[in-house]
Structure formats: C-alpha cells, structure tokens
Amino acid sequence: MPDLMINGTKFTVDTSNDVPLLWVLRDQLHLTGTKYGCGMSLCGSCNVHVDGEIVKACTFPASAAIGREITTIEGIGQTPMGQEVQQAWTEQNVHQCGYCQSGQIMSAVALLNGNPNPSDTDIDIVMFGNLCRCGMYNRIRKAIHSVSES
Ligand code: FES
Ligand code: FES
Image (cartoon, rainbow, N blue to C red; front, side, top):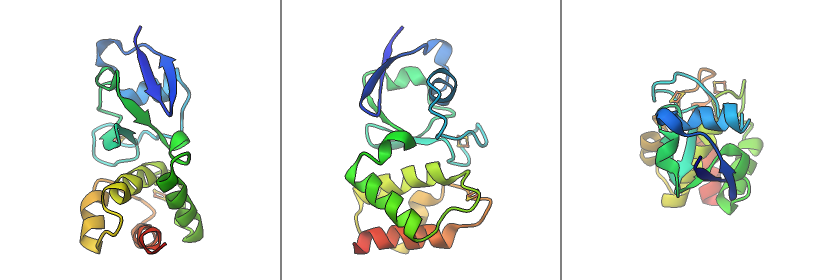
C-alpha cells in the first residue's frame, strides 16, 4: 500500500481502484474537516491542496497524490497564510452553518499565496468554484481583502 504525505505526516493508505482522495481522508484517516457536498466537482466543499494547488478531493484520485504534498483544513492553520486567513474568517464572522467553510478557506489561502492583493474580480474568479448555501459571499470577500490589507 502506498504512502500519502498529508499535513506533513506520512500515512499508509489504500488508494486502489482510483478511490477519490476525499474517501481516503474522511473514511480511512478520519480527517473529516474536508466535507462532502456534491461529489461532482461542483461545490468546492471538498477542496484541499496538492502541492499548493486547489484540487477537488471528491473526484481527484488518491493515487494521483502519491509523492506529493497534501494539505487539508486540519493542517492549513500551520502555514502562515492559513493562520492569517483563519484569523480573518473569525474577525469577519464569516461562518454561518459552516459546512462550506473548510473548502472556502482552502481556496482563499491558495488565492492569497498566488496573489497577495487580489481585486474583487480576482477573488470572484478563484472563489467561483465554492458554493455557500448560507450566502456568505460578501463576508468571504471582505475577509480576503482584510488579509491583503494586513
Ligand atoms: S463535494 Fe467535491 S466539489 Fe462538491
Ligand atoms: S456557511 Fe453555510 S453553506 Fe456556507
């Protein structure tokens, strides 16, 4: 069985039959901060980073992450940008039900790592793939801008 490097720790997991990364994270490793929403790459609630890039874990084969660095919501707070984004989320009171928020934070961190001062359009382009049934889009945008300003 292959190893996956997740949040800086090596895990031996079953990645057979192209099982999606989300099932490995949630069912095998009990890292349940990454959420299942649509299962079809449409909502972004399952977003994690693989080598710093956003991937949708519900459709991304775990086998494709072998030898790469996976970061989940459980580990993002250990990075400087992850810490800043989580703090901004708290200060702006972004959460409502919270279901979409781990995916939103993973997208925001990837956005800000690549573009520390994004415009509204830049934010919309990257965050477009994250749906929020509670409609917290304005607060999400405000929190991202507050990280830029800091
Ligand atoms: S659960 Fe993966 S994009 Fe919706
Ligand atoms: S905070 Fe409820 S779905 Fe986004």
